[in-house]
Amino acid sequence: MRITKNEARRRLRERGLRVTAPRLAVLGILANAEGPMSFTQVLDLLGDSDWDQATIYRNLVKLREAGLAPVVSRVDGIDRYALAGDHEDAHRHPHFLCEDCGRVACLKEEIAAALSIDGPWAESIRSAMVQLLGHCPDCLARADA
Ligand SMILES: [Zn+2]
Ligand SMILES: [Zn+2]
Image 1 (cartoon, rainbow, N blue to C red):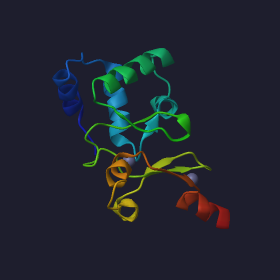
Image 2 (image 1 turned 120 degrees about the vertical axis):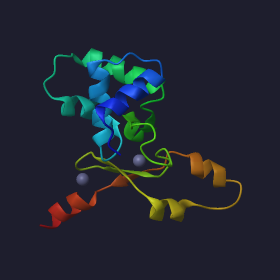
Image 3 (image 1 turned 90 degrees about the vertical axis):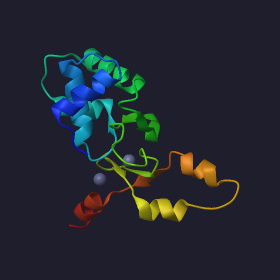
Image 4 (image 1 turned 135 degrees about the vertical axis):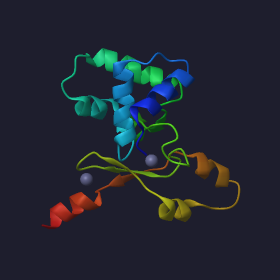
């Protein structure tokens, strides 16, 4: 999902946060991300900016606390953030971490369906953070070449 600057402003105000340039920048990055992003990845994408790392981190935490940028993946012990409302299922789907390139991809229905079961574990599985590790299709293709 992509959001406009105006939409980002509206969301900040709605949650009682002041609209600041770093907050808009971080929201913009999360909005354009293909999957959940770590703090380091957000920093990388911001590139050269006038803000130091601590400023960015504080703002990311603010956004998380306000519910605008929840942590949706903790694979490998690293918090990864996503824009709230980004996916209908709020990233409850399984995530795949590529051990080669480090990207975390959202895996959709097919895999979630394979994990859906009935019985006492059904609710636990549904709300679990399911993480898969391996080599993503891009890296597999590169390895073959
Ligand atoms: Zn990869
Ligand atoms: Zn996801």
